Image 1 (cartoon, protein in one colour):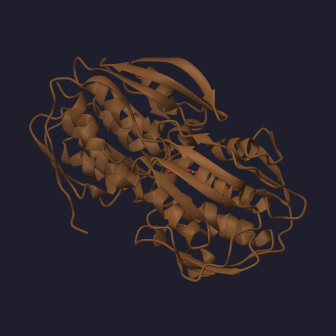
Image 2: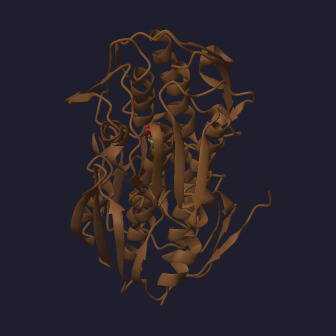
Image 3: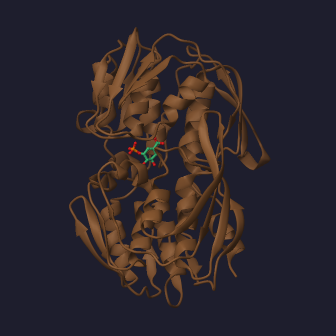
Length: 431
Ligand code: S3P
């Protein structure tokens, strides 16, 4: 693939009403639970980004059929039932997607067959031991590089036993892998996490008829229960909306409304943090669709002030830190991000990447072992490189909107992983 470089010019202002593409986390889960359900699941506003397409192709390799309409944003999953997957004849390819690999490992652990899974150059260097170690304790056989910590991984599943497991990290991917394996285990499986991570899996499992219960940060699922197909509307991805929200906050005179955005309380930290920074945000028209809260977000330009982002706010903003760092660079005083060492094992080391890339725009920013400190800076146009990380590419583009002069985002094609049409949507808001 050729690297695509994108030129970014600062706009006078950003104005208009838009929708952002469907939520990535919910799109993945709708495909997975739809595949394991009895009957057809119709998914509307599905995210046809590369990560979710990787999930679909893995399930195709296990005999599940899909019907795609509306440019891939409406997907019907022809479910096979909890015991309907067949042994894949090829290596499953999760591409760049940690969610595909980790959640799928949970499902593969429950199958009475052999499978192998790998991913791209970034994914084969991301830790899988946090998942494979727990699945092994349920009885799965999983082999991979460095004791099963890195893909390619081989799985021999089946005969799982429900147990209570504790995750060392607040990770929805770890929690979801264990809960999905729990569907195939004898008895009850409980996962306890150190802090609340996004809860889309629990919500969707209930929506599909699984027996799920929650207590503080412990979630329990009952094994051996059938799932029933259920139609899903995927709300707009708040992690994608975040780039537009920060852009509208920092570009003078902006006024942008984003409709039908998912505002699940385990994901909406960006709204709380931006409000604490002084942003002008209104959230209205709340509804709940297939168990997920959805709302309209209006955001206008406002002067921002620095804040500290740490503790339990980190899991609620984990994917938004790169763009929150851009907001921090435009905010008076200092913005401090701590307790975010997890950023080092994302699509790239996002602490190092944010520090180095924002540094190119002239931002005064210092790396910490578990975060960064950012001081208000006058941004100057720069040539930034995404390092193949979609959220780094979009964060650099947003920095370019607030900079003097032109900027170039190198290797921007990776934006298609989570936000196809990002630059067109941004251009539609330019005044
Ligand atoms: C995701 C969970 C988060 C997030 C990722 C998507 C999910 O990862 O960063 O983009 O869909 O479950 P962790 O669970 O590893 O924190």
